[in-house]
Amino acid sequence: MSARTIEKFSSIRTGSWLAILIFLVVVPFSLVHASQGVTSDSILLCASNAQSGPAKFLGKEYTKGFKAVFSQVNKNGGINGRKIELNVLDDGYEPDRAIENTKKFVNSGCFLLTGYVGTPTSKAALPVAEKAGLPYFFPFTGAEFLRNPVRPLVFNLRASYFMETEEMVHYLADVKGLKKIAIFYQDDSYGRAGLKGFKKAMEQRRLKIAGEATYPRNTVAVSKAVITMRTIRPDAVVMIGAYKPCAAFIKKAKKVGLTNTRFINISFVGSKALLKELGPDGEGVLVTQVVPLPWDNSLPGVKDYAQTMKAAYPGFEPGFVSLEGYLAAKTLVQVLKNAAKEPTRKSVLAAADNLRNFDLGINEPISFSPTDHQGMEKVYLTVIKDGKFQQVNY
Image 1 (cartoon, helix red, strand yellow):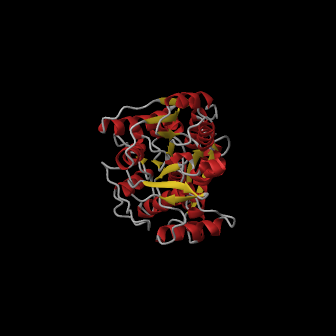
Image 2: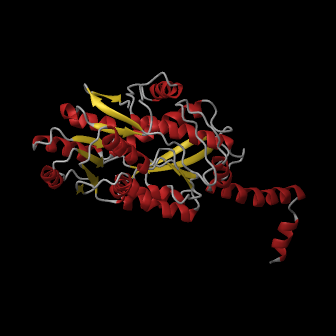
Image 3: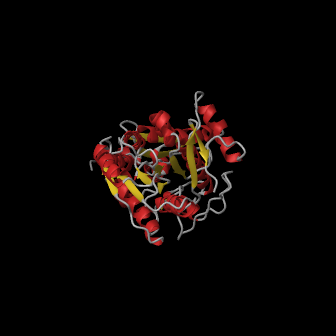
């Protein structure tokens, strides 16, 4: 170092040295804190789901529920003065795109992941999230691998596919006395997750599966499956799919003579979109749900949902998927509120593990613990009657 440089540094006042010292200490801390997606005035949450393609209804509706709640929270001051930002990237319900989106979230300093839609996308994205230590809250899937064994970073709100398929078989076999039950499912991890639950429910009753048929994800290639079912002529078909292929299957099945067959869909199908796709062919079609009727204003949570959604989306129409998104967002907001004033991923996970009897206003309080990351367990059965969904009581 030259004499001139030494002289220059020696001329710096003590106050300036103190400012430099504070800068060197505080700035790195701020950068580390911000790198977790938290700044002095914002919290960055990230979601990858289908905003395009055949499953876009699910992604768009689920996201609407989250955004409506976050908008309301932000108008009221946010979380301890921090506004919630939700970054949504389109994966088209394709696993490879979900992986790339999740990598982008990791690199951009996302605080936590939420609002993901689908089993194959979650299965692909989760290893990336877990490696980066990113919490994974309330994916729109009932897959068992997200639940058992309990994953420290993963929290589930909706009932599992095992719970839904058990209710399906209970209704068909135990209540209605049907024995010849077949299954139509999406040929991927989502469909196989439903298949596994269906098999378990049938085996518990010592019933044989009448037959199986599949279709490829993100297609409506169901003709081969319809031919298979026409040969079997089952009393009922359990359906594990998305709304477009399921609607196409039901329409074609009825055309080839399966008019007395009962069709029962799992909640992931997207009920509102299924109803629209089916038109007159929807009469009598059954769907299991993991949330109450979204227009049942006798429930405080549903009434609040309608008000919140209308404030965010003037042309809003109630639906099961957006209601689930709303309930998931409300629960996540409570977790964030319960975390430390200066939230970290660790404090948020601890807050979730200690959530007890959180009342969403739907007669099903939410609790988590380190050994139980399953929030809701109720399954509701609905039927399309006179062009709208009604609850089946039995």
